[in-house]
Image (cartoon, rainbow, N blue to C red):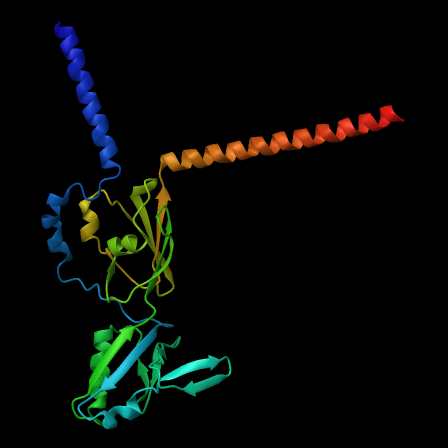
Amino acid sequence: MNIKRAALATAVILLLVSCKTKENAITYFQNLEQTELLAAARQGMDYTPRIVADDQLSIVVSSIDPSAVAAFNLPLASVQSVDQLQVSTTPSLQTYLVSSEGMITFPVLGEVKAAGLTCSELTDTLTGRLRVYVKSPIVTIRLLNSRIAVLGEVNSPGTKTFYNERLSILDALGLAGDLTIYGNRKNVLLIRNNNGVMEHHRFDLTQAETLTSPYFYLQQNDVIYVEPNKARRGNAKYSQNEQYNLSVISTVVSTLSVIASLLIALLVK
């Protein structure tokens, strides 16, 4: 009787361990209670994205007297065709393109350095220079082309555009509809072009350390890749083998058909 009880207890323990292992493979942030100890390491770090070359900026200058700032705003326009630009009453903002040298060409002020600054820092720069011409100017800047790519085992892969100043890895996966059941939550790859240098970082979403990672907040043009888990790779391999076998069978059948046709032709003669 004791042997039976011991065997039953062992079976229950193995079942619980097995269930826990399966849960750990798909459950996010399992050691969340430890993040308070790690959060202090992230305090004081700046995650605000900085403007880079080829960014498109919307910059609007306003003040109490609208006529005083008219010269500092690009006219509203709408593109009617490739070679025709028409002033339109329909609001359609023209944008400032950051050059490869990191500059924008601003009305009256001329060349202004933008690359390397945050939107807030560029706002302060323009506001300071505009005070020479306008009393109490208000500068509003938005980054219009913030986008990231989310690829692999997610429900909606592709390029995602965002308009917030900060986007986290969780926000990005949310835009992509979360991981599929076949996504490897222990190995989510981030690829980043940092001033021409390719960087990469791997997230383990099952661990709460992801929340305190210096890569938790993304930058524009980051690429997120969710690799398939073992189950998906096994299915893909099986499918490839199946397709190969069908291809071989089809080739053999075609060959036999040709041989049979030749034999029939010879017998008829």
